[in-house]
Image (tube, rainbow, N blue to C red; front, side, top):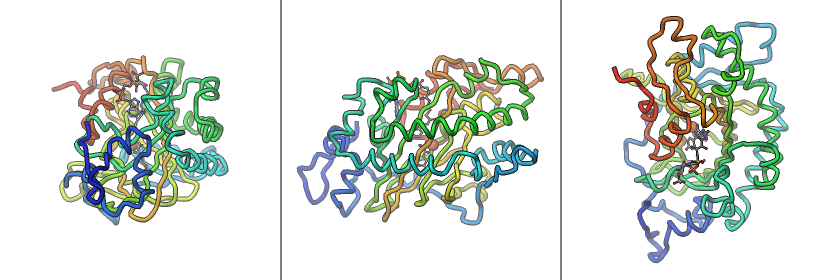
Length: 363
Ligand SMILES: CC(C)(COP(=O)(O)OP(=O)(O)OC[C@H]1O[C@@H](n2cnc3c(N)ncnc32)[C@H](O)[C@@H]1OP(=O)(O)O)[C@@H](O)C(=O)NCCC(=O)NCCSC(=O)/C=C/c1ccc(O)cc1
Ligand SMILES: O=C(O)CCC(=O)C(=O)O
Ligand SMILES: [Fe+2]
């Protein structure tokens, strides 16, 4: 449980009650105009990062996708080498991206009592969760982020249960990004000699979707905390839309001495950031790598981001694809029920790339 706290100026203030139970979130704290960071948000030194300013992740222009096979080649290379890249001219209309960003601001602008209706405690379904930090019960230090997480089941369910402040725009964004998703998955599979995405592959690669609306309000001491701690996603692929503020960092050359460090993912108007998640790392037997990333807090601006996590279905068993094993590869991962993998991820605080060890075959 997050420790009970006292804001230095108001000793009787119960932070857990205000932020978590009452649904004010860190946005509520920021809106109070607090001048210093409450102690619960102070992260240990190792959570803070060594930044390499001269390096970056690839930016790929997809305008020539149909006529130039080099574009698809760059996507596969970026997924193998970096696990993270940005796409421009990707075909998802810019109005749709703007629409979902506006809708995110609209949702977080609602009064706390309205947002709290979607909290774990009050929501009528586990498929919708408004919350703060990542896993407050498991964390030694809290993260400076509020979120709304929506697990997609059907249009019908969404139209009844999702918040009306953002529902239509979120659904439109999910729908309009589907073509891009299928294109990227087919290309990544072709490179592994998996020629056809049949029904069972479609399920493993993109059988379920979760979309998060993330809100990182202005923070009084941004360098002492994090927006999101170091983690890799448990998805197969993540499509991330960020606003113009910046703050997302990706780890490159993990474990390679001086080269090991973090690079910024600069906001590019109209772009989408794509990253490989643990499920695709496991399915590809390590060929595509999920990569650690984190978000630093901003001292001056309220930032939003909107990841679509494209995942296996919760009841799928994931493991290295049979085509790879048939071609003689030694499996690096066990077969594991995807929902068990995700529960393992959600049960602990963010801890870099450690989740994937849950599926590794020990040598
Ligand atoms: C196992 C799931 C996740 C939940 O199943 P459930 O048993 O019906 O639901 P529960 O509400 O009992 O959730 C179990 C636990 O998971 C956690 N959890 C349940 N959703 C959530 C939730 N959106 N948020 C953060 N905890 C949650 C939460 O800890 C919760 O415990 P508790 O708080 O005690 O109820 C199930 O939906 C499932 O298998 N989903 C598969 C598809 C899926 O969601 N994949 C995850 C893609 S998300 C991803 O790649 C990255 C996400 C991410 C997110 C935040 C970050 O900072 C960084 C990364
Ligand atoms: O806000 C961002 O840029 C990234 C968020 C993220 O990594 C996540 O939600 O998994
Ligand atoms: Fe992430």
